[in-house]
Image 1 (cartoon, helix red, strand yellow):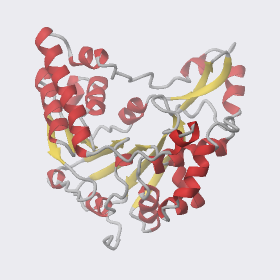
Image 2: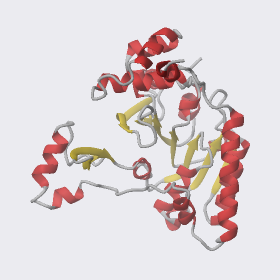
Image 3: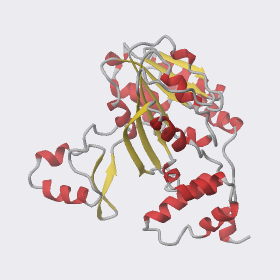
Image 4: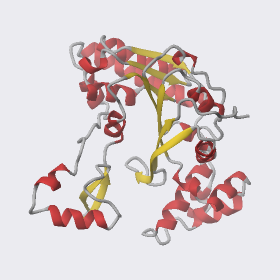
Length: 335
């Protein structure tokens, strides 16, 4: 078997059992830290587990205020079509070169919380580490009027999250069983005000999610914001999406063989991301669902950022889709 053969060999998505095993180990670690340091704040536990990344609310504020560096930062942002008015992207230095970086995903989600937000929901939450980071960022006083909901596929993930919530003792946390293929969000039926719902690299694990999820969110008696942070930016390319849906293995095997060529090109990054999704049987219908919901008038697209960060794996970059559901929109149920 050649090096290329090793690269292109399909692996398949993680099973429920493997996910459960991983979250079970997280739960054990939470127990160990909590037992050894029962008085430590939840933020300390998250930091020790290398899962505390809230970041600055507006990284560009420095450049607005400092006339000396203002022109240089402006020029760096201009190269990628951004300005200081957009807090999402800011000037940075990497490997001795001026470049740009993106605001923390957790910080972005915190910015979606409104004065009337009464519930924050993560779908496919694992051990709800993202929810707990938002909780730490907002603080206990602000969180007194917010219910945090972790909707998770595995029992082990739900159990681990409950352990961390119990250690804190003050968060209004609720764990629920959830499956993207057969979604149930009835736990939100009685919620009023504003609900922030988000996903972060969990839809990726499911090849085809049930589009009726959007109908369920639209039917809630509350204003709903939905933010997806998922590695699905490659789906904007019609050819790549068609090849995935057609199960064209030969096509993606060929892409895998080109992985190391022209690494500075945007096309190579896009194809490599599609190849990674193919290799692991990752999601292939999120962009279609968003497009259909937009055409039906079910949602309004507030922001869309493709492939903006890939700290964990450059083959699996995050894209952001910030959506607002249109209350009272007359739409037909998705079949």
